Length: 194
Image 1 (tube, one colour):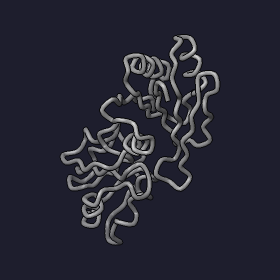
Image 2 (tube, helix red, strand yellow):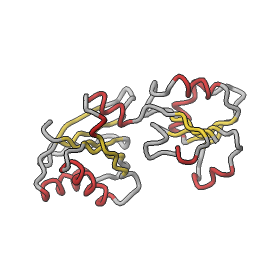
Image 3 (cartoon, helix red, strand yellow):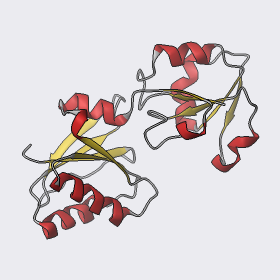
């Protein structure tokens, strides 16, 4: 199985990934990843929506599986015999904000224990790192702000929504005035002294 990252939004796929998709005989992915890859999938290619990710082993050996963002950033990359990267939401956000990725720490809060993820973010910002949190639509930014106040950490909460899409928005807040998500597709960064 080949896992191809389609990037975090339109235009965030690599030329290598586009070329491989043009030659693929069978492509599978989520509705969002298929939408991003659609311009590069040939008409005679078998296309399937993945409903149950626990059954990926049932796909043909030469199947291409799409992963939104980059497959190695909390994605499907660990499942592939071969992995082609895509431009991740973290790369996009750090470039837009001109933040050094060398100081980044990824916190996977998508479908995980949210309080544990929040605590990890605060531990990392206290150590001088810049935590980037992959969130789910139900992530509670106000709860994160409350934990920041409790720990007395001074930092900026950066909300990145719809990265790579025409509706992209980046907003800044504090623990006292946290930013409010208007999209279900968002990630968070905590940065000191912004």
